[in-house]
Length: 278
Length: 251
Image 1 (tube, one colour):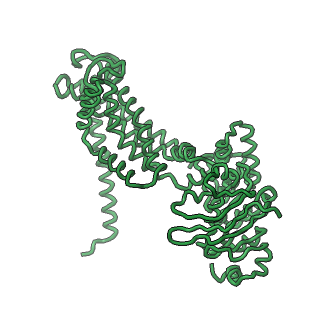
Image 2 (cartoon, chains in turn red, blue):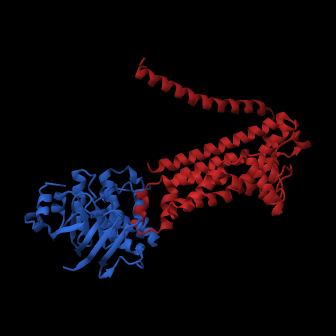
Image 3 (tube, each protein chain N blue to C red):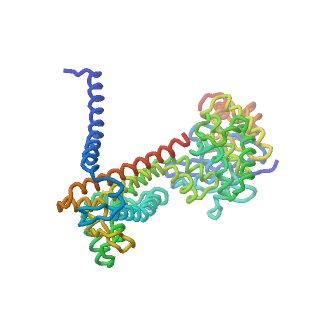
């Protein structure tokens, strides 16, 4: 029996629609549940005070600071390193065995579970390099963890910049470096930013790799060598050890809201950049 | 007539074919040289050898000389950045950079180290006037160059090349995607520009070559079949191939 072409078309359209709504729906349900359970303890005081009695009472101020510092520090190291690698792979070398090996390495790195990064960071940074459980050890570990994402997305974004733009730039007396910084990178910026945003999300939500390398001290980290507890780790410990489910959900709410805010800001910026000259 | 560019025994080979075979050509100062020939005859390659954009192609063997003001430009010690500032290039498709009209034009001058606003403003106005575009865009210099029509974009690319105050302008089929009115405007601009520049115009439109150039070289399978004053070549071609090509028997 031959199925009517138009019926197939309609069926595919409806089912694709359903799949899209389903995905968004799940996201909304998760956010809704966290919102519902976390809102009771979510207030300004919760954001600005120190925790008391292992987090049973009080706020999460040190965890907010710890999260911000850890993510910023990781990005500060990973972004130049990752974008630099991507520039090297796309602009400064031809496709050789060497680049294939680098690319293979990057891809393998992306598939490793985060707990492995945590163990590596613990053995190498915390013990071997004697950093102890610290902001620095955590940030370096997360750097290695998010590097593959930044490299891959930057590489794709740079590759997507039309070859013509480079030709025009050269024909106007630009060097390779000038062409890269003035034409290629600005055109690839939205794509590169997408990679950075994915990394921020991953770094903010990471627990396993962070517990092993930054520890879980509830004090406010004030130097690179201080231990600290990120919001994700705080949530994990509160829930895991049954300390306070209310406080755990309130922490999760702060975490989810901040990731949402960062994403919205990033997309707003990207939209502005992309529509400026089109 | 003073010779601006002298091409001597130029050979370009890829791993598969000879793209240019023993090309010898004189390009006179303050004139327009038209280069015509069917697709694959090596016209564009010649352009990219002169401005050394050929450096970005892989695995080409090049021998011979390209002398600009008696100096060979094919050597390894030639500073291609300086060379490309002396040569303005306009490509077949208009390629505005994704930025404003103003920013497109000052791109080259800024790289050269010019930072003074008043000088840059003058360069922008001057270049746009020379490219016959000023009147159409003077009120929207800071809007996106991508919003211009195809013909305007190509004149912007010409203006952008002129902003570097080059000595030579190379145009590689600049009107292939343009309507007759835009084409006429470009030709009008070139006719004015030859007073100050040496111009090479590649085109596969024989009518345009006949209309807009002083000298014509006919390329066929990498060789210069015939080179002469345009009027002579079109009224009295010496070679059979040239005659057939002009009459549209192949192309």
